Image 1 (cartoon, rainbow, N blue to C red):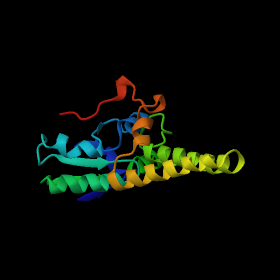
Image 2: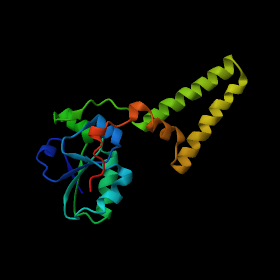
Image 3: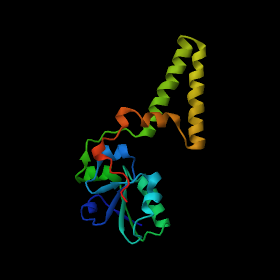
Image 4: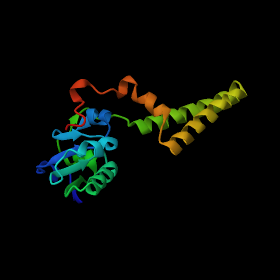
Length: 175
């Protein structure tokens, strides 16, 4: 796997695969990038030519490293990774489409859980000790999410209006 800098992405002539969520992709993206979320990458890539030149990208480079590794394990022979992701492109002056500023679901969960924990503790101290149950509920929910990979709060937040993807930018998972 070869790492490509943000400056080199302009000359890249292969397929650019953005492995972020559809909401992140809608918020900001490279003009030629296709959105194939990391959790769907193996399924979608199964129909691609194993000799295609691929450039895998994400926000900062963490998910793209995982995506490039997965593609290499599937037998793709020309897999590249965008070093530093879309953040590096923006800093290097590469044209980035969209408005940016989207807060990823994982961070939204952390913010929501933190606020609920604080509220439970404050309300338990000032109003009624039974509010401590709110902190237990949140803690058990986070523990369950960590153990199973399924987070009800994340699923709820994905349905919120600010996380919806406009129809004209969906573009997920081309064949």
